[in-house]
Length: 427
Image (tube, rainbow, N blue to C red; front, side, top):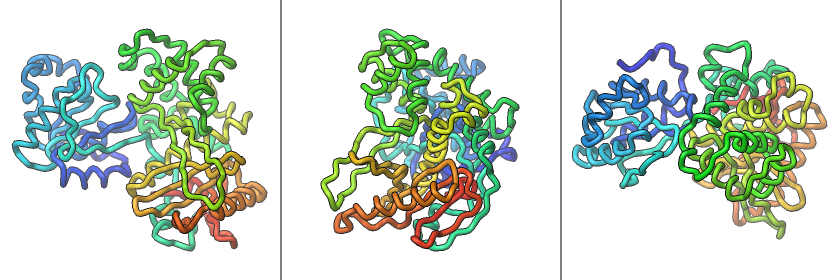
């Protein structure tokens, strides 16, 4: 049995999974808990074993000295939460070396191995697929009439209509992209995210690696990251923010260790700075833009609600930017590209830089509202930023766009900048 495939909401990484299974002996689907890894993996498997299921404990104990026991089953075989039994990785790698067959195993994991790491990397045998919570396109909250890939392919005219008002955007930020929330639509949209935060702080594995761990300090750190979401911040800045806003005292080392755990379990999803060649000698800021894997985690960490977002538009705008960055990252990674941001010492910035493997790039400003002044200012900033790029070293941007939460119509401005409602954007 492979699960309830008829209830499956397709994911953007489905095609990547198909492609890599056809070439590699195994794939490892990595990502945070509850983002849908197991459900997606079941669509491509013919048998499975869930290593965190207590019913499988006798088999797992019997296999401690002989991990090949777990590999027995129809192929592709799904091994869910493999990191609890890291010897599996080496067993799979050996089996692939012996059989030279593709599409044999699917591994899913929400963190790297806790107790011991595999002896071998799996390079050339086991390919990695990164999964995140659902984008608005995957949750059917965006029509996808404006295709990011089409824009990179040179599309000059776009169209689409979105009906979202500010309250709708607040709901989408609070609910997040957790499949459970998308499907069941609970009355309290932050229910899943708040339980997630509680699970991370109190019960998530990985913290036992630290000499000393405090749930209270982890909560303080998550609140600090949420207050500064979508903003560049050094570790020292986070330390200061925690002290000023919570009274908790964390050292640079403690923050670095806690962040390493959050990265390990795929909760933080920071954005690196882009450093293009410029016409001038402007200093470019290089700190990471702090982000969480889903905007609902920021809402939950701040103990906020949809109504609270509507009372604090500064924070709301940053959380909406986090939602937009989540979607843009999934869409550009489906094109084998990367997401960056730009900011220089003079304050000129570009919220999102999408960069493809062949050197193409696009600049996007993210705005919660859609007022004429807001869109005009964002478009002018994009054009000014693009004018600084040294075109002898870096290609011209394929396109520039303002991505808006409440814009109603997708269109191309006379200056060439696209205006895209978030409810129209797709891969």
